[in-house]
Image (cartoon, rainbow, N blue to C red; front, side, top):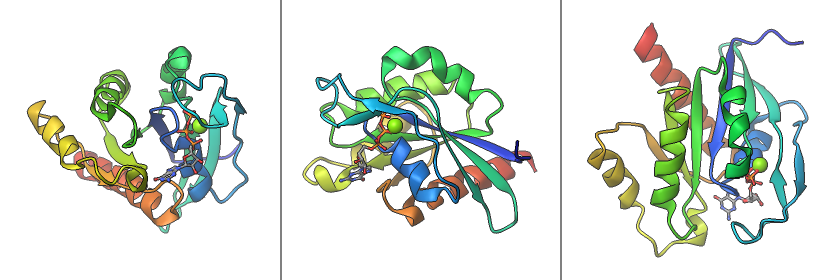
Amino acid sequence: MIIQKYKIVFAGSMGAGKTEAIKSLSEVPVLATEAFNTDDHSHKKLNTTVGIDYGEITLDDGNKVGLYGTPGQGRFDFMWGVICKGAIGTILLIDHSLKAPLDELDYYLDTFRQYSENIVIGITHIDEAMSTSTHQYRQALMNRNLNFPVFFVDARKKSDVLLLLETLITSLETKYL
Ligand SMILES: Nc1nc2c(ncn2[C@@H]2O[C@H](COP(=O)(O)OP(=O)(O)OP(=O)(O)O)[C@@H](O)[C@H]2O)c(=O)[nH]1
Ligand SMILES: [Mg+2]
C-alpha cells in the first residue's frame, strides 16, 4: 500500500483516451482492466475498460499522485462515484471525433461535477477531426457560466497529459492554499 497525497480520476467518453493517458504518465506498470469491446456501435475500438485503471506518478515536488481511470461506457456509471471517492479532482477527456462531442461533454460534466468541482477538460482526437471546430467547447462552457480549463491534447503524449494534471493541481492550490 502506498502513501499518496493525491488521487486523481480520469473520466469521460468511451475511447477518449483515459487508459492511454494513464499509461503515458505512469511510472509504474499500469493496472488496466480492459476487455474486448462488444459495443462497436458506440466505438469501433478493440478494447474497453471494464473496471478501474491504476497508475502512479511522482511530481517534481515529490508528491505522489495515484491515477485512477474510469470505464467510459454509461453501463458502468454505478462505478464512477466509487472511483471518485476521496479524489482531489477529475480530468475529463472528450473525443472530438465523436458525432456529438458537446452532448458528451454536457453528460460527463453533469455527472462528474457531483463528485468534484475541480475539473480540467482535455479534448482529444483533434488530429482525427481537423475540420470540426474546436471553438465550440469554450463557447458551450461560457453559455453555461462554467469556467473549467479546456486544453486540446493527445492522450498518447506525456507532455500533454502532464499539462492537464499540473493544471488540476495548480487550480486546487489556488483555491485552497
Ligand atoms: N489519433 C488519436 N488517438 C488517440 C488520441 N488519444 C488517445 N488515442 C487513442 O485512442 C484509443 C482509445 O484510447 P483508450 O485510452 O483506450 O480510451 P478510454 O478513454 O480508456 O476508453 P474506454 O476505456 O473504452 O472508456 C487508443 O488507441 C489511444 O491510443 C488522440 O488524441 N489522437
Ligand atoms: Mg479505458
